[in-house]
Image (cartoon, rainbow, N blue to C red):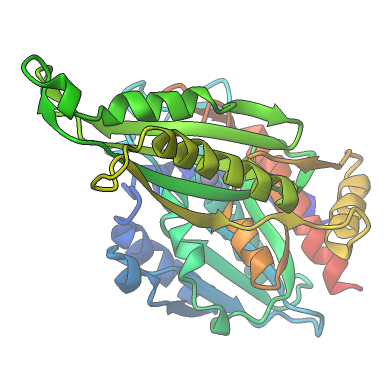
Length: 382
Ligand SMILES: [Zn+2]
């Protein structure tokens, strides 16, 4: 079995080297300059696509195509290169086999543990000439700021129609369902007036938005649906009736029908509130300007899809379990799925991501590497 050839020390070194390289979203340039030659040295054909230019980042997505030594269907393997703030000058510290930051920053195990795991796997596969089919390695930019790298990925470079994204926690689960999400940007327009001298001639946009929000359910709507008002911004001074407030939020559901219904409820709450306060005849105020955009579409891989069965068989060969999971979050996998690549999300073990307490056990990274190695071996021998 391949698992015995994984070298935890090398994996740890690679991981620590990667997290020390700053790569905040849109600033992944330096990381690409380091990763690309490493992948070239492993014999991959590497491409940096044009996503970076489209979204105003330092670099595009890094794609590395490995030809493999077995004639089987190409497999996608993917992770994201960007990290959130505070993520500059990360100093990894290792205590009893667990990596932490020094407390001032995140650790960046989300998702550099996955990049380290994938690099180590590819190094072992290539240097030992172990059986493996063609692999499309996709290292994306800007996952953390709305999956922008994946959304602008040049899919024409990819051969794979199935594969795995490494970007979650549990090393004994594959995430195969994720919700669709809509973002809404709403501006309520009222009328400005002096709050003390002539409040009657004003229309308070903040008060109207508050009424509309109060009419909504937010938080968990049901087992598969959530709603959040995340940002609100308006007003100028205490003595001015505010004529404008913007409200931004999102709705998610694993059911497209429920998402549509919820999105309609949100829209109607604002429309009904402003309609009820409009004076006739008037200047059309108050009014609500509503913009709804799709953030990502639902992922839904069948439990008996080969992508799941392959992960299950690999886990069972290693004497482990492999559960299928649903997530409330969106990931690059949603975008791959939307583009016809059936993708499961595997975990590498990071805990408390997006916080300065973020940590990861080396043992979990090793487990993730062993699992993916076994997946690749099983697939090559199919
Ligand atoms: Zn991530």
